[in-house]
Image 1 (cartoon, rainbow, N blue to C red):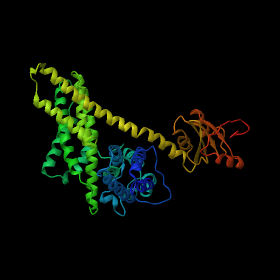
Image 2: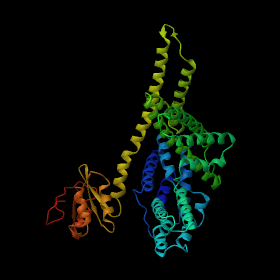
Image 3: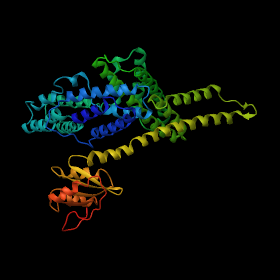
Image 4: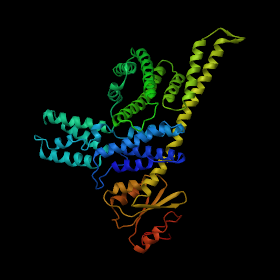
Length: 478
């Protein structure tokens, strides 16, 4: 993951032109998301960058993202992309930027009262990988190991199990995968009394909601509690957003930057949780008659706190307050007062619906097309892959298929249905796993070892060609 972060840092930390900035942010968000979810695995590359290098690069990227976030010319789309990047960056707390971070795993790997084969497995599957090229898969390996050593409570000593649980917690912290309650607890010390009361109220409401039993008798209580939780969440988000309004100074200490990252992640985590609350609220209301419009209005409040058209969000909120204050009347001039009030309310709700629809459409315009482009560019321009265009389709040639054949085929098929043919420039058994999988994917798959033909093939990169495969000649009529 260290190399991936370095590439991102070079891309983002610099003098990007405003026209290039959005695209760089979107591709960075896609790339980091795929790394964090394991779609792009992290392999050792022969280097030895310890996790502190990851943390230091993450801090540089975070500072640049915050600088862009607070600039006056930053577009709404750029703000959305930045908010997708933040949760994917590893932590840069002081314990992770130390010269030798995450050393507990080394001590556990040499624990005295565990079997030798377990020591070796911890060393080779977790310790070595973590200290050479840390990535999200290390947390997965640690979780699997923790499940193994806790399966039989009496099999390993309590001290050993406890230390391994601490390691698991440290890796969750490094990967920024704490739950929302844990994240909020971690910033409590930085709150003043007023802010702390808002945090306490939300955590109390959330705990009550988490412990609420699902039953018919609890339905009315759940609606009331969901409303109170949503209101306390909005109040807390407003406090945090207010604290994040000012940009970072050049001389700000590292500890303050680390705390700001915590605040930013808590604010984004609250946004995510708000939509979970809205979903539960909608389901509860549907059980007693439904209220889609109320859900949409609540969404507009949270979109404003996320930086999406805050002026429009404020205007919608002010309209609703105005209609509330005006109240119902029997007559407004010669018109029915109730009908006039209902029409006003409908106009405001329609305005709220348009706002949330614009937000959804913006996300759909930003990411899907870039994801497709990224898949093609990432895997079709790698050191082992080149491609030709065949009309609207792609014909690619693999310079080699070393090691993991499944991964080689995944690189080819990742670009989707527009991959119609593959030429492998090395010999491979006809019934190889790669050949069989290519047949299953309905992808034309041939091999070619002829040096002259390979030289001809390489000249065709980027050109339109016709692919004709026969039994005697692997590639013909190119």
